[in-house]
Image 1 (cartoon, one colour):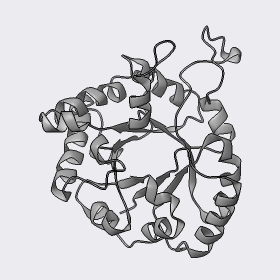
Image 2 (cartoon, helix red, strand yellow):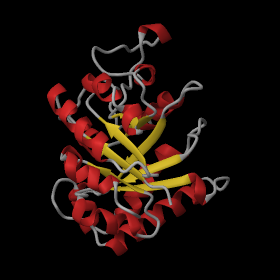
Image 3 (cartoon, rainbow, N blue to C red):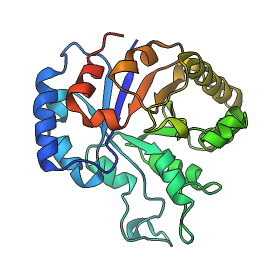
Length: 264
C-alpha cells in the first residue's frame, strides 16, 4: 500500500545543506519507490528545494499558512510577513501543514492579531488553503499534550480538534490527518504500536462519524513524533497507519533516504 513519508524541516537548512542533501538523496533514492514523499522546507528555501523535485520525484509543502488576507483579495487585515496559499502554489507546493503543535503552542503567546488556534481560526485557515481550483492538500495536525494524556482526555481532545476539519462548507479532496502526540515530539518517547494503531483507528472512525458521506478510503492518518530509522518500519506497518511525518530524523539525509527506501 502506498504510504506518505513527509519531512518537516521546520526552521532548518541553508543553500549548502540543501545542495549536499539532494545530491545524496537523488542518487540513493530507490527508483521503484511508490511512496508519496513530501518535503516541508522553510519558506525562504522553497525554490532551492523545488529545483530537485523532478529529479527525485517528491512533492513540496508549506509549513504554515498566513491567516490574514492580502491587498489583492480586499482583506481588512493584511499583515507584514507570512505566506499565503497563492504564494505556496506559485512556488510549486501541493501540500500545507495546518495546526502543527509548534504553531498551536506559539499561538498561545500571541495577544493581538489572528491566532492559529483560537475558535474557528483554524477552520478559516483550512478554507483559505482550499480556495481555488489549484487548492493545496491540507495535512491537519492533531495531538494531545502530556497533561491531556495523563488525565485520560486524549480522545476528547482529538475529537474537538477534528471538528475544525470536519465541519466546513468547503471540503478537502482528501482528508489527511497527522497524529502528533505533543509529549512525543523530540522526546525520543513514542506511544506503543498498539496505541498508535488504536488512536489512528479512532481518528478515522471519528471523522466518519462526523461526516457520514465519507468512506474510509477517503481518509489517511499519519503518525508524527520521534520517528526514526529504528522505529519507522514498525510504525508504517501498524494497522491504520498511512504514513509518517518526520522532524529531526528528516534532516539526516542518509537516515531519511533509508526510511524512504523501506519495503512496506
